[in-house]
Length: 211
Image (cartoon, rainbow, N blue to C red; front, side, top):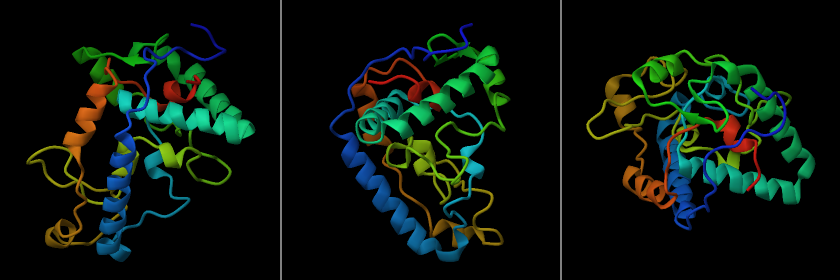
């Protein structure tokens, strides 16, 4: 496996125009949930628990992150290069155990590969995380998983509410329920289809190659 340069993620896709609407809806939903949660919500700048561990992102997340990197290369090339270097270092360290196609960044879909992903890079900091500031360097373009972490959310129809373990400590189920954050799953799924989705990857592969 090569140890330098950018690894090639499988897709080159344009960011759907509707993504800006999705982001606006999510930003408004988060602000509203945070208002209702008040001190129950422990999320603050510098809290990085949710910034550690690998997680799957879809093609829409990839397109948004790459659009963000393209913007950074135009406005702050030094910052963009630093992010890319962290992504390359992440891939060099964890790529040999990547449960999928390590040269493309596509996560595997077999039961064995999915089981391996459960234990993959669980303590590794996200390459988008700035180690000096404790902030996300691509916050404006972050994946949907990052946008719903913290407040109570349902990741699917009828599923139980879930929230960050640092939030709502000591809250009752009813207190948690009234702070639920609505997630527009149908809109996201439609936009993913527009990207001609070919599978899932992780953040490092999305950050490592310019559009």
